[in-house]
Amino acid sequence: MPINLKKRIIRQVSNYTLLFPISLSAIITLIVLAIIINEASLSRSVLGSVELEIIDKNQSINSQTQEVIENYRRDIRFLHATPPIKGLARASNNKGVDPLENTTYAQWKTRLEIIFAAFLKNNPDYEQLRIISTNKKGQELVRVDRVQGAVEVIDLNRLQNKGAQEYFTASSNLSDGEIYMSEISLNREYGKIEFPYRPMLRLSMPIFDENQNRFGFIIINVNANNLLTLLKNSINTPFQLALTDSNGYFLSHPNKDFTFGKDLGSDISINNNYTFNPVANSSLSLIKPKNNAQTSYYTASKKITLALGEKQNFLSSHVLAPVEHIKNIEMERRTKLYVLFTYFGYCINYHSRIFQS
Image (cartoon, rainbow, N blue to C red; front, side):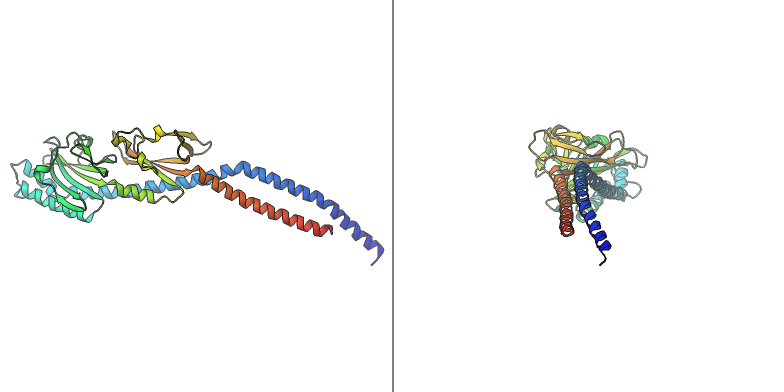
């Protein structure tokens, strides 16, 4: 090999050898900077991902609820349109005989009880169907119940007066065709809360006679446990779900002892038991229990409108992401990045040794 060429090769290799420590130092500096930048943005990035997931879950809860509620509305419209509904009103106003069908009040009542019983047998979400009089100030006229899985027509001497109930006042002022929907509350019989607890959602429609005089209303009791369980089961762990009523009382919560405080005379509610700390530039809030005895969560809320009107009725969905879950995601992402940097550093060190030798 010519001497000049040999010298040139040696000089070139020497230059690369001198440059490599500088390049290695620069690369290490870049890695350190990347780690610092990653740490600064990691929490924000993870929270952003969790926020999108929570928003999506809240929207799913809203869609499922509206679909179920619309089915309830459709069912009460169907029952309201059956012939005995108007027949009862006509017979009641004509000394017990419907002049249009020449049918007695008792006959219409029996026919409606048969319809109600058949409906309950084929629709397990419903617990009770009733006709309540407004002329008799809240007296039940027709009632069919689900009792321990069986359907039972309630005898005349067991019918109750419901004039003191909130739903009576609201239902007595409905316009023709309008539907009232109550808040979800625990069922009461003879003024006392039943046990085991049965959360109920009530829908009603007014009944008018042929002269548009108010006769009463049809009211259906829906077992809200089915809806609440459906919504709860739609949230996959580690996310959890809390549902609150219009006043912030829990209808569903990871801790069952927190639910139905309004009915049970407890002050447990989302506002009384948690502090909210909004996250900057986010729809999320960090909520912490005031007694510091439970897990803290990141959450975003979604109002679910059930009924509009003078007294708006709504639920609020709060999808909860435990803070520990956020930390686990951060650690997982951090570990993956550090493994990548370690492997990169190993490769640089390996090639450095080969090059220098």
